[in-house]
Image 1: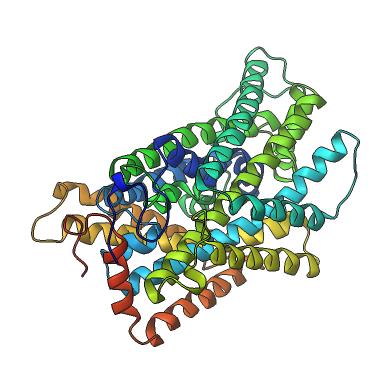
Image 2 (image 1 turned 180 degrees about the vertical axis):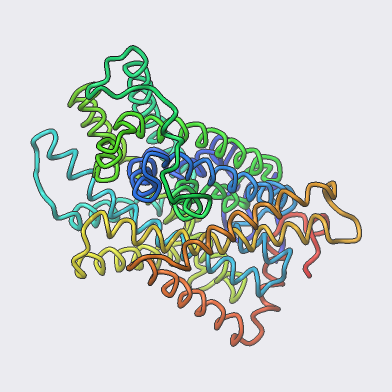
Length: 487
C-alpha cells in the first residue's frame, strides 16, 4: 500500500490531510476542555488538599510539561493517527505500542463517559437557573448529549476541531471575567463574605505533604488529559512534524495559565477560612456559586451553560480521539475492513460506533447502580486518568529509548533528565492513587488492571500481531525512510 506525501492531501488509508496548526491546537485544547474540567476538578482536589487545591494543579503542570517533552520530540519524527500507539510502537516495539494504544483508547472512553455524565449536572443546573426545567435525572440529558456528539463525530474532522475551539473560547472568556472580578473585589475589600486576598491558598494543612499533593494530583493530571490529542491528527494535519509539536506546546501553555488563575480564584473566592474551604469542597457548581456571590445570577447561568458546552467539547473530542486510535489499532493489526472501515467522508465509522456504545453503557451502568451525578462523574474520570497515566509512562519511556539510547542520540544527552523526571512524576502519582486509597477509589485500579490485562492478552495470544502491526506502522507512517527504525 503506497504512502502518500503531505502534498497529495490524504493518506493512503483515506484520512484527509486538511488541518492546520490552529485546528491541531484546537483539538488538543478542546480535548482538554479547560472550562469544563475546572468546573469540578478543583472541588475534587479541594476534597484532599483543602485550601491548597491549587498545588495539585501546579504539581500536575510540572509533570505534564515533563511528559510533553516526549510527545513534542517524538511528533517531530512520527506522524500517525494512532497517537501513543504509534509513538510507542515505533520506539519500544509493536507489542508495547499496541498495549499503549489500548490504554489510551480506554482512557479516552472513560473520560468521555465521565464528561457526558457531568454534562447532565451542569445542563440541569442551567435549565433550573433560567426556570425552564428542574430535574435531577442526569441520565436523560447525558444520553441526549451523547446522541448529538454521535451525529457530529461522523462529520469531517475540521468541523469537529473548529467546534471545539469556538466553544472553549466563549467559556474561557466568561470564566476569566469571573476570576478577574473575584480578584478585584478581594483587592478592594468588597468580597461578599469578608474574604481577603492572601497566600493561604498555597498553604498545606497539618498532616499533609508531597504524598498528599500527589494523591490530589490525579485531578490535576485529569485536567490536562488530552494535551497530546493533536498527535492523533498526525495523518490529517498539513506538515504534521512541524505543526503537531507546536500545537501541543500551545495547548499546555494556554491551558496551564488558565487553570492556575481559575483554581486559585476559586479557592480565594470561597475563602481560605475553614468555612470557605468546606463550601468549596461541597460545591456542585463552583462557577455558579461564585458568580452569584460576586457578580449575579445572569453570569452564573451563563457559566453553567459555558461549562456544559466545554464538557460537550470534551465528550466530542474524546469520542473522536478514541475512535481514531481504535481505528489505527484495527487497521494496522488486521486490514481495512471491519473496525478499520472508513466512511465516504473519511471518518472511522465503525470505531466511532463502538466507542459511542461503550460510553453509553458506562453512563447507563452508573445510573442503574444508583450513583449520584458527582460520584458517577469522579468514578469514570478517575478510571480514565489511571489508564491515561499508564499510556503517558510508556510514551515517555519510548522517547528515552529513541532519543538517547541509540548509537547517535537525537537530542542532547543532558536532556534525558526531562523525560526521566516525567516518569518519576507520573509513576509517583500512579503509586499514590493505587495504594492506601479509600473505598471505592481503591477498587478502580482493579478495573483499570482488568482492562489492561485484556490488552495484554490480545498482544500475547494473537498470532502474527507483532508482524502485522510492524508492517502497518511502516506503511502508515510518513516518510518511512527518514523516520525511526522499529526495534
